[in-house]
Amino acid sequence: MPLPERTYTRREKAQRAKLLFQGAKRCAGDISRIEKQIERIDQAAEDRARLEIQAHARLLETAKHDVANARVAERCARGDEKATARQQRKDAEKRLRAVERARR
Image (cartoon, rainbow, N blue to C red; front, side, top):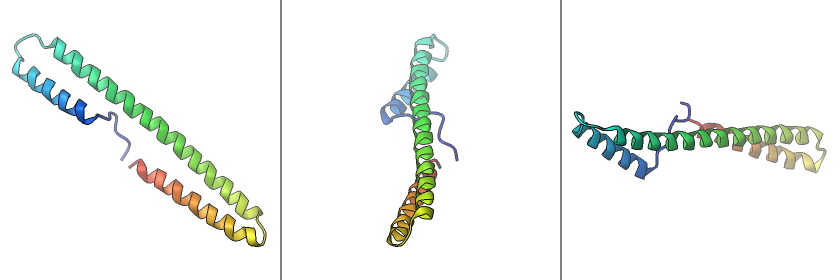
């Protein structure tokens, strides 16, 4: 499941529900003010979701680079360093999986 298109705060959800209710009550009248408020809330939620998606993409890219660096370090390690490098690779892979799961 991809990240949501909009991320509402608790306050925004309540405010939006209130505005929708007010708009439904005034369906025969002028509701342009209510629609503008809802649009502002939706835009803020879309901006927040976009920033979260970008942050997740950066974090995912960093985690992938960390895994690649750890794999190279493990291949280059000798003797006692090998076990430490192996553990660092496993830790990097674990972080990568956690970041990937966070997207769902």
